[in-house]
Structure formats: C-alpha cells, structure tokens
View (cartoon, one colour):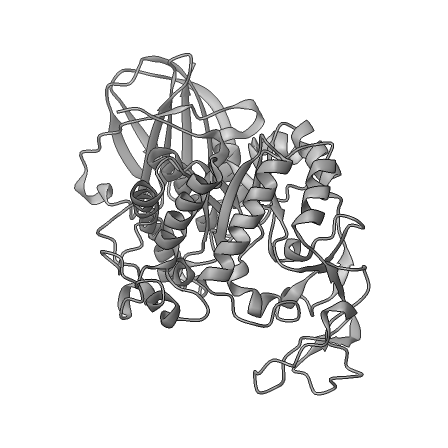
Length: 481
C-alpha cells in the first residue's frame, strides 16, 4: 500500500534565510498572511490591519523574495491582493487619535494610531480609504505579475478575505458573503492564469472550521444558496466557472487549520490533549475536544462533531471538483516552544504524507533550533529526506493504534530504501518489537526526551526482527543505508 508523498508538505511561511531553508529542508515557502491583503508591489508598502493598529509600513519586495527563496531550493507560494485597495505609503494609519480620541487602545510606539474600536467593542466608523490606501484592481495585479522577473510556483487568491470586515475593517467594512467572495476568486484566477500561464492557483485560503461552512453573513447566506455549505458550494462553482473559461481556474483547495481545542494552560492535561488532537486530521471516530465536538452542528456535513479534516476535504473535492489538490497553507502546533509542539508537528508531517496532502506551510516561521523546527529537521533537514512514497505499517498493539500516544510512519525512496519515523507522545518510554524490515545499517536521528529539544544522530545495525526503545517525549527517524 504505497502512496506518493508530495514534497510540498514540508513548507513554512516566510523562512528567515537561505540557510534556514537548507538546514530544515523547506520545500515550499509562502508569502501570505493578513498584511499581504494590502501589499502594494509598486512601492513595497502594506498595512497591518487589525493585527497592529491598521498601520501602513514598508514591506519586502516580492520579486526579490521569490528570487532568494527559490535560489535556496524552495518553491514559492505568493498571495495576490484581491480586494479594492492596497497601502499607499509606509506611514499612514486608519484611526488617528486626533479624530477618534476614545478608542479602546493605541499603539504604544505611536500614540496617535488607534485600534479602530470603541471601549464597548463596537467598530469606529472608518474614514475614507484614500487616507491610507490607493485603488487596486485586476489590471494592476496583472501588471505586477507579468512584470515579475521571478515567477511563483503557486499563487493564492489573497488571504482569509471571508473575514476582511474584521481584519481589514478600515478597507472593507461590509461583510463578505458567498457571491462576493466567489466573484473575487474567479476574477483573480482568470487574471493570474493569463499573467502567469505556468502558475497554479490556490483558493480560498479560508481561516477556520466555522468559515469552511458559512460566511460572516451567517446562515441566511447558506439558505440563499440552497443550504449548501461554503466550501462544497465554492468547489462546485469553481468547477462551473472553469468549464465556462475553458481552463482549470482552481488547482488547489486551500484552507487554514488551527486546532480548536484549548491547550493554553499547557499543564499535563493540556499537553496530552495537544498530542492527541492530531487525530482530528484523519480519524472519523475522534470527536473533537472543543466546541466543534460539543455544540449543535453549524453545517450540513456528515459526522459533524468530528473534524476528520483531510479525508473530509478530499471527499468534498471528489464530489464537487475532481482533480483539485489539497493545500493547508496555515497550520500550527499551538506551542512552538514546548516539546509537545514539536512532537505534534512531527506527527502532523507524517500524517500529511500518509493521507496525501499536496502542500502545507506552517504558520509562521518556526525557530530553526526549537521543537517545531526540529520536526522539519527530523524528516528533511541537512540533505536527509524521509522518502517519496508512504508505505503501510502494521501495528499489533491496541493501546497505540488510535494515535493518542504513538505516531508511526514509514516510506520508501527511489533507491528502494526504507525510512521510519516513530513519535512517542507518552511520558514514559515505549518498547517496540519491529519485524520485516531490511537488515543492515541504519542512519538514526531523534529529538526530544528529558532535555526537551536535544537532538542527536548516529548509525546502527538492525536485524530483520529487532527491538526499539523510544524514550519518553521523543521523535525518532531511521533510514536504511
């Protein structure tokens, strides 16, 4: 039972340097996030939105970014602004205290820049967009893309525009519903396919579970569209639009996935929850340990209290727009500096390979030597590669099969050499009898254990049947030599 592993699952957002890409084996790098909605490529300005007081600021140049990232060996994914405005300069801000003195808070480094919200939680009426922004349209987007010297591998249609009335309230204060979002997706894709004939298009980059199924407008929007939930409706409409256009307008269904379970306490119970919540990616029996699993379902999907993310999305694709790939362009461990965040990430990277995710980029940039960075190092760092096809692992241990305390993955590469990753998510060592593996020398690396982020590598010899003891809180990589 072999299944190809797409190398693009080892991606991150905004890698810090060429050496970072090389050391962690980053295969695709994303230029995205809230600020890129307002990116003006004709001056390299952007606006932080409600992430930081709706302030304009300078931005890296996209063309230069693509050049150095691809020069380091990573493919690229770049967001195209799809709303009607982009930042006009690097200094303006949307909610000055001189006009609105009674805002909830102000930038501690710029006392005149407010957060656009009154103390009672209501929004300040936005001032004219021209105070901060300049108009943007598909003609300008085409001019930018056709003028790029270095072309991105994948383009996304903006970033989470379904919630722009919050994240970019100053730019687009009205709620975005099904029809407006679809129109912007189609128009941007048609433009991008003309400007960059070889680029692949990913959309709609939806932010979270709730908005996979409905819009900010709410259930009346679903009702107005035959009670079809957002993502299946979007896929069907993009299929129809592609037929009309005579070309595929959507290459990847792109979503963001952030675990809904609350692990903020980071105590023993929260750590255990963090380590088992990766089951939400694949397990149809795992009732989500969050509001998703306990609330009245807010969608029309089967098995609605179980996220079952990857198979669910693949089924929606098969039903509504076959041939579309699956991208998860934002995901997170919920605890980048904790060893459990690193172990979860190692588990997730293995799951993405087993279940056939086509592209994934971590949000945002894990520390190269921190727990999450070490998960990338484990699979792909410093020239070592896990393999290009996932192979079946049979586990005869009922207590471990459900994935709560053990992740286990195997692959084969072009040279027919096997690799194995075992993630011990338990607080005690696990002893495993391993059989039917090729005998001989194996390269081994691992991270974790009592030291938390310690890493180590060596070579050893295995017999066809052997015993492996994986220390507590440790991820182990083995590769046949």
